Picture 1: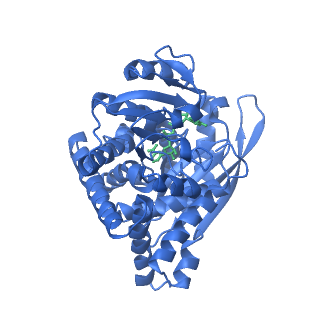
Picture 2: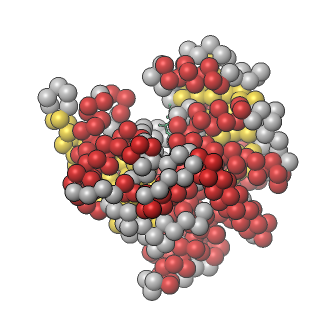
Amino acid sequence: MADASYNPFRTAQAQLDHAMEVLGLEPSIRQLLREPMREYRYRLPVRMDSGEVQVFDSYRVQYNHARGPTKGGLRWHPDETIDTVRALACWMTWKCAVLDLPLGGGKGGVTCNPTSLSTAEKERLARAYIRAAGHRMSVDRDVPAPDVHTTPQIMAWMLDEYETMMGYHHSGVITGKPIPLGGSAGRNEATSMGGVVIAGEVERELGHQIAGARCAIQGFGNVGGILARLLHERGARVIAISAVDGAIHNEDGIDIPKALTYYNRNMQQIAGFDGGDAISNEELLTCSCEMLFPAALENVITESNAMDIQAKVIIEMANGPTTPAADKILYERGIFVVPDILANAGGVTVSYLEQVQNTYNYRWSVEDINRELQRRMKEAFAAVYAENKRVEGPMRLAAYLLAVERVAEACRLRGWV
Ligand code: NAD
């Protein structure tokens, strides 16, 4: 991920090309699906606390809207480029289609280092982004949500700016909001909860038990941290965790509630936690374990470490953690990989349920949300697994075959190709 030569959009296109080839899609559809339908770039001048103005690069990509309004998070990260956003928007398109949500795929990003911004600077940046990009967003057009380094509070400022600009309430335009502003019960945990549902389906179909399984989790933020807690509660032995500053290993199992308290008190850092031995992020990926959950950023499982991975199952909670070359190696080695567009789809599923509640101006209980989330994740897993049995190859290919055909069908029905 810190490798400047790595281009995630090339990875996304390679995965898509493979699926389109197997599906035998017509050339016009291939041409359409290989590139975003709309993309925007904004330069955002923001006044810093010092009084000086800093200009930030930012993006919004609406990749494909054949199946509905585009949907996808906003990432604030120093390595954000138009190509990271294109890749993430492309993956969102297939993710929404795998879950059979009536949505297209989109994504946004701001190139910035959020850890160096004050709360007031973050608020001004969030509002500046919406002043620039908000005219092209609406519940029927394009709906953002949180992603890396963006939070429900940031969504709240963005919603307020949007509604102030438009002069009316329209809470469904942004999901992942705080609950008092129309956020959904269960949204915060949804991505991780979805990952646990998938782990449960892997247990049911392949017999890899969660209880007692040694799990390694890369990334301890919104997704990885909550996932660690949920797995710990289900009796898994979480033996390795990490954040950007380092990783911790404990063969007896890490005390996850204690680690979460440490992480939240130490400005989202895990180094120095005394509940295990310090290891590197690279060592975490290749440590001896049954289940590996990459939950940080893309491009972490590559040709250079795929041979060393010891996990039997990889559940991709991050977007794009595995390169196509690594995928091939993992498949040949018999490691069962649940791809990102299925494994981490719990977040967008509950975002969709949030939009539905906002449209009806109604609230469902957390029990209702989790029941619906489970049902949809299980159905999607079953469909992908059935496809995987029909077509020889990795689960990623099966998920792509289902998703790309669904999007292609919508494009054909609209008469676009
Ligand atoms: P976050 O900002 O809350 O947490 C990211 C975590 O990754 C942090 O612990 C951070 O320290 C760690 N990290 C960052 N760089 C790292 C590195 N180089 N090595 C190891 N760890 C590193 O973000 P998040 O919302 O938890 O998202 C994590 C991943 O999950 C991303 O790929 C995101 O796109 C994906 N995702 C998130 C959601 C969601 O609902 N938030 C939904 C689907 C997919």
